[in-house]
Image 1 (spheres, helix red, strand yellow):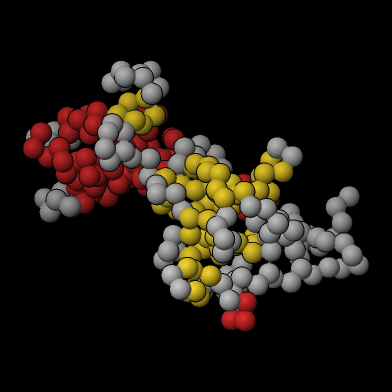
Image 2 (cartoon, rainbow, N blue to C red):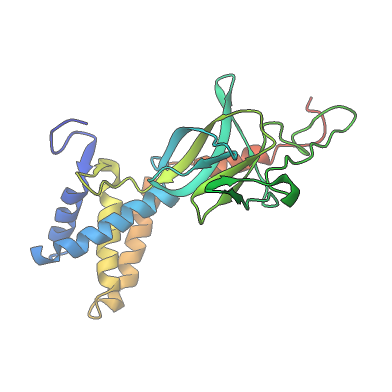
Length: 239
């Protein structure tokens, strides 16, 4: 990242906050409060509305076939394996046993307790089909321990797609300039929501924020692409 404060395609969260203060005609003493709104608004955008929030990480499975969340993960998108230049996504299966057994101080899985046992792979006329089986494997998320259990897979390297807040707690947070208007609209709306003197006008500011979201429209998200892909899976041969 350049050392310049502002570039043609990038601004900073601080600059957006300063602009929001000026447009809302609020005093500089409201800076910290407005910055908190901006932080939440940027996270909201990356989680639900724009594609910049998706990051990819290459992870190696542990001895008990798990991968840990990156520290900046705020939401899971998908996990898969690279194959012929693309990602083959694993299938979620919430029936996978994710309990573990301690052997001394070491976390293990006990097959007699159903832990770490591969799921049976169904087969119809010796032909595997995506509609009934995913040969790349399955996963279940252990949210409490921020990790993913893998099952019925033969690979040790995985690609995790996830969403990050995108904010930097120790340094400058850079934001694409195309988010400037929608973030300012969000900040002004949040300011009105928590000000008893502005509650009656808060719905107006909410609509302005929604209008900015419509103008920002970036098309389908990665989750929508995945949903469309999964909807095409079938047990029948494709011709």
